[in-house]
Length: 67
Image 1: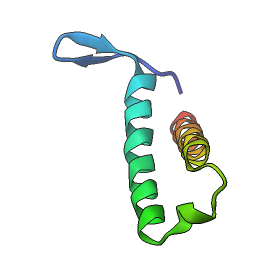
Image 2: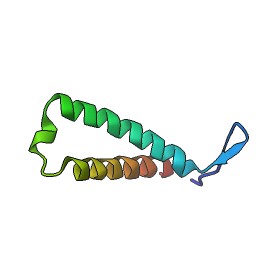
Image 3: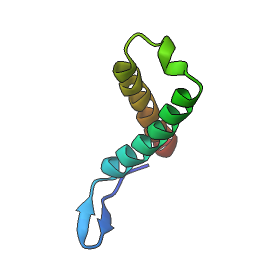
């Protein structure tokens, strides 16, 4: 599948930017769930852990859409 630019109110937006926003929203939801259950207390560096989670979510979204 090819990715094409999206026309958003006259501005062309790269499809990767939209996927990045979707991954960020999903990561925010994961962080809230992890924070509610106290899972981030067991992680050495929560910031790096959430960056890794964001990367995993973003790459998963791209792989699912590109397939």
